[in-house]
Length: 219
Image (cartoon, rainbow, N blue to C red; front, side, top):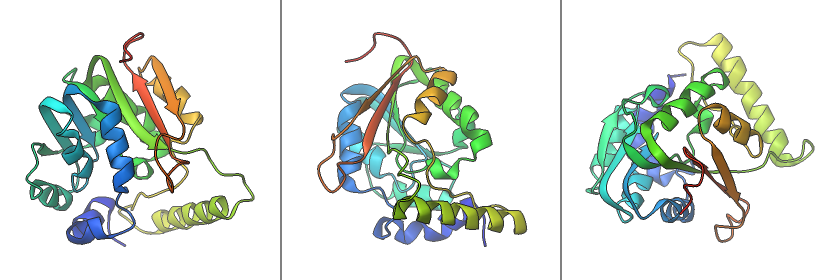
């Protein structure tokens, strides 16, 4: 019954041993898709797994941003090249500073009403020609067990948040393909690409989306 931020403060010491941690093959695939570049931003970095992977592909600077002090404390213990900053991902304190940005598994913590602000903040943090890389999936059919379970969970969370305060924001089926493409374009990205089958089984259904801030900037 805690808040989103405090809940992750409590979970932080054991987060990397939970199913909520983005699997390593997905983290590596995103880092490889980003690099090589000068600088990269890990949005909602959690315990810093993606930021650590990005260090191998960045020649200048890697920054991880998260709102949870507990998660950032664990991230700092990794000893990677990254620096870690506590900030609201919906209002990142950067403007045209990074060549690339990633976000792994945090979209469910963004309320629908905040999605435009969140994506615009990432676009603003990127230099012209910068790219935003993230994993997503297509929404399962309405009759599938996965879809039914996700919808049931979302309904339970909405009831919880209507009854208890502060909210714990955590929903499934967000930022899915192809719906997210229109949201990226509305937020200031100008070119969007999806790659299927980029990650080996059992993650072959994960889609890797890249959105650029300038036309013709693909490597």
